[in-house]
Figure 1 (tube, rainbow, N blue to C red):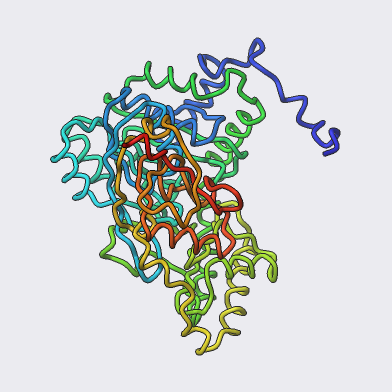
Figure 2: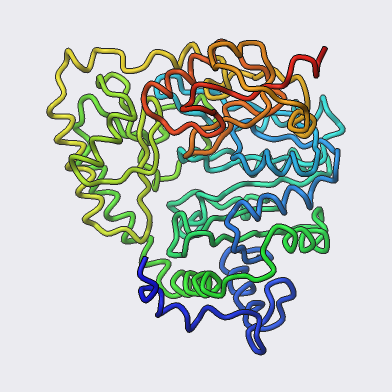
Length: 457
C-alpha cells in the first residue's frame, strides 16, 4: 500500500500526550466521551479499542473469579469461550431451540435459565448473546430477573445490537432490560471504525475496580486515538441525527418489505414465523434470506448475489444468507437487494424449488443443530493436554483439543474437551464440500486436533 495514502491520519495518530487524557485513567476528554456515551445508552460506559472481544473478556473476568462456574448459552461467540479458558472456569450450557425449517437458532428461554440456576447453585454469572448473528432477541428482562433472584450478574453480548433503543421500533436494549454488563460493537451497525466498541455496566453486582483492572489487561496500553476519535464522532452523530437516521431506515425498510412480498421460493425471515422458539423480538436490520425449498444452498445464494449483482452479504449458512442493513445505509442498497432477490426468485422453477438443498442439518447432532454436546473435560484442562492430529473421518468419539468454527459467525461447533460425534463429522464434511471457511481444522480441512488417547487412559 502506498504510504502516502495514510498521510491524512498521521496528524491525529497521537498518544497520551498532555491534554489528551489516558484511556486507562480517564479524567479529561476521554472521560467526557464516556459520559456522553453513557447518557446516550443509559449506563456507565467504557470505551473499547479492542472490539467487543476485549469487552467480553473483561466482563467475564470481572464477573467470574478463576475456577468458578458460568452459565452460558452454547451459541455464544468464541470470545466468551476464550474468557472461560483464560479464567479456567467451569461451564454449564443453555441450548437455544432450533427452527428446523430455516436452520436458525431461536432465543434463550428464561425457563431454561431458571432450571439451570436451581440445579447448579455454584453458578456465579449468566452470559447470553442477544441479538444473535441472525438477529434473534431473547427475553433479556426475564433472564436478568432470574439471575438477580440468585444474586448473580447477567452479561449480554449485544455486539450486533448497538442500535437497539435508539428508536421504539427497534427492540429495547439489554441495558434498558436490566442486564448488568452489556457489550456493543458500534462498528457493526453504527457509524464507527472497525475495532471500536462500548462496554456498559450498571447496578452493584459488578466491582468497578475489578472491571477496570481487566480492561487494562485486555486492551493495549497505547490505544489508537484514531479509533477513539471515531467513537466520539459516532456518539456525536447519534446525538445530533439519531432520530432522523432511524426514521429514514424504517421508511426504506418498508419499501424493501413491500418489494419482496411476492417472492415464491426465496423467503426473508422476519421473526414472526416462529412463536414457539423463544424469539422474544427480532432485529429488522438483519435480512435472513432463506433458501429452503428454492433448490439453492445458502452458500450458492451468497455467491450469486456477490458475483451477479455486486451485493456483499454478511455471511452464508447452509440454508440461508444474511445481509445487514443499518441506519447509515442508503435507499439504493435496500432497492438493489430487493430487485436482486426478485430476479433470482423469478428465474427459479417449481422443479428446482422442490429439490433438497441441504439435508445434513436435521441429522447433525452438534450445537449447530441445537442438541447438547458431550463434555469430557473443562476447556482449560483440555487445551493444556498433549494433542495429536487425525483425519476428520477417524475422530468419532475422540476429544477435541481445539476450537472449530465457521467464521462468520464465530460460534464454536466444538470446543476443547467435547467429544466428536458422527453428526458433527457429517456437518463438517458438508461445510467442507460447500467451500465454507472452517477455522480450527488442518491440512485443507482434512484433519482435526484431538487429545492423545494416553491422556485419558
